[in-house]
Image (cartoon, rainbow, N blue to C red; front, side, top):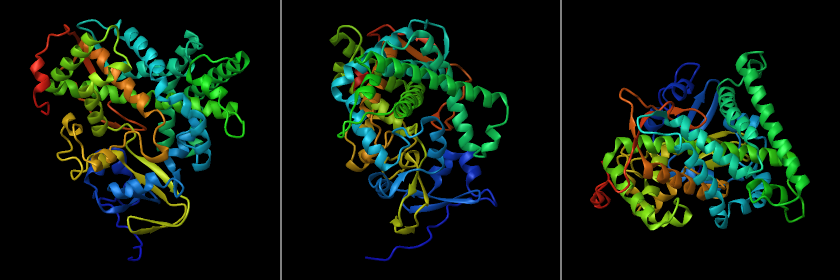
Length: 461
């Protein structure tokens, strides 16, 4: 076997002093697409610091499937811990294993109907305020919807409407604050008595109070409310030990963020892409009409087999715009990656966005083509990473896909969304890959008023 090669090549376009930091700030997605997809490893300079970007499926899969060597860490996760502490997404290997075993029952397949109820009810409440001719900011509407669904799923009916409103108002402030702290790591800047810092501190205090009081009430009641928090409070590990109040707080914050930002961004992109691809939209409407006729009442998990195109639309959207577009790991022991030696303590980055735009895996990667997922190759299937992979894969991936599918079906069963003329939608690569303001006009859609031959057309456009 050949010896490991030291010193992976530096990525192109480095600037004096800044290195590649300006590119990742001003044009991160084109910059990532321009990097070599199969070098194994390239060096990035982020100011005075160095990091290594895993390029190509082999290197990325090594990182994801060896969590002991490539543990959660690096600059992205250090700042996330401001909010989620040692939650499931940020905890180290040993802590994560215990937490996941305790939390897994809350995301079992048998609980999908329980998760689907707040999806149906909150979506119906959102759509009740829509009417033909109204202009909506789809990003705002979808994030508010996913946040209310998350609050209901976590706390059931035990969280009062006032507390739900506090959570809904606090989360955007917290997410902006955490992202600012990722970009400006100097701690002193965030201790200044500035309005943004005060808003962040108040929002954190509000969420801590709501979670603390709710956990205390659950422990006092000592009964199962049929929600995720009940499972977190009652779970015991092999030694009979329960999660502490601090651990529950960290998990609730982790789940709240994971169940709000990524699905909110994904739904925003779905409706934007459908409006830009009318043949795909018509085929999706036909499928949803057929599924609605076959099921009484709102579509639930039992309708998923009849929403196959809808699911492919969602998968292709997650390929084009994965919410978690850039992630980091810390090397825990001297190792090799992509044929290069890495020392303990090195920071390794990987980008689902870059992998999703590898033309060897996804030909014509900028084309929106749900038919990619009719019969994908094993390598393409493995390279789709909106939820990660390995034992650190998102614990709620099936719950999230179910929620996305049911929300898209509920909206498209009643409405068609049309872009407001002059609206320009650009990806915003921040903590999550969002779309900013997406202004669209609501049009009522008569059920069945589509050409059902569209389902048999080639939907790529």
